Image (cartoon, rainbow, N blue to C red):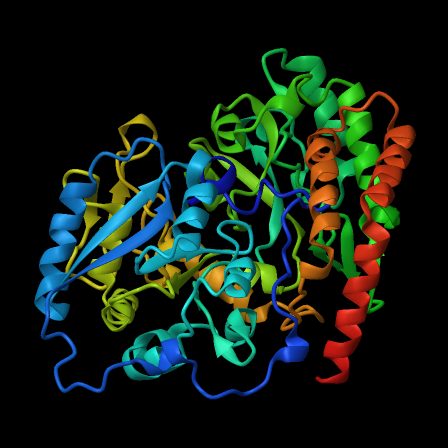
Length: 515
């Protein structure tokens, strides 16, 4: 993760509203069906050969474009394939699909039964659970045991629960922040200018004095950032885990609730509405969809974390491009969704499944190959600041902004912790993320996989309501807050939220009885 994120699909995390998340974050095949089974035909076809790399093969890897200005693929693949051919007698080719057409194109490819090898999947993009239900992915247990030893050593053991269906591993979960602490981020120069005690901020309302000061004294600044897909820090609900849009699981009470009925949630968005009316939020915030571009503009006094809290503000400073300071806001529980924020699957149509697994294992074991695929070519896409690329951890400077013509976020490839020290993520920031993962508290739902098939119509209808309401809630831009909440509640009821709640409870009860 660069701050590892750009635009809607490309930036998983900060752009997600806790209130009415539009993506299904815990869905798929009911874990009441999770039983030990004999290996499926796809998995059992792993060839028993003394020379599995005898024949040269081409390996295809599909993913959404990480950045729009992607120009150096041929050069990057040339460097990487020298290594891949020598070790695996294979050639890798990335198939980058524009974000606007990504979901439709990859679905059509799978539906048509077209052969391909590796593919990006997650809880919110090319949905893992939906693909498993359709039989689009190959079980990986046998392949991992035979060719994935480095992967097995490095993946967080807890994460396998999130990608296991009916006892079979269906994807490889990436190393990624599973429980990223969020924070309030402030432009350092403004904090110092007005001598604001930013460490005293513990809630949204604590921002009020600073926002008021900025509004009155800095006419060219917008006091606090909020966009259609980028909620302000402080509205998170760390004691609740989203199940589907508008329905959350109370970690303290162990029960499902409608998110709009949570008192703290109601209060958080009431404060946002108050901020909007006082002019602390941009009037057109609800139509702004590129959170990262807005954050980097430097015109906001208060932002949110860039994908994780760092006590010295280094991560946000690096991502946003100007000095920042930050203070802790909240930390969510580790959920099935957060553990599948980025994963890699092998298509059920793959003709090169063995070599595909070998390639993944190679990436998980070789830092130079990993970082070449991620950062690009030395001298073209990045420069070395200290050490050499053959050292375990050189420090590099990757090109950014308009000059950036190659990037794949490390957790889209797999092993984030093997990332070189850089302006994307410092080694210090990576260690902080890793430590947060290790210390993070697992959700009471971890391992529970909701099968949305019985209520897929209602979920689609709820999603339509959320798509309309989310930008209004995240920016506080409704004229009558109380009325808007009640109207939205009614729309959700009409869409079938009560039926979905009942189905979730039914499946959860069955799962809990079996676990």
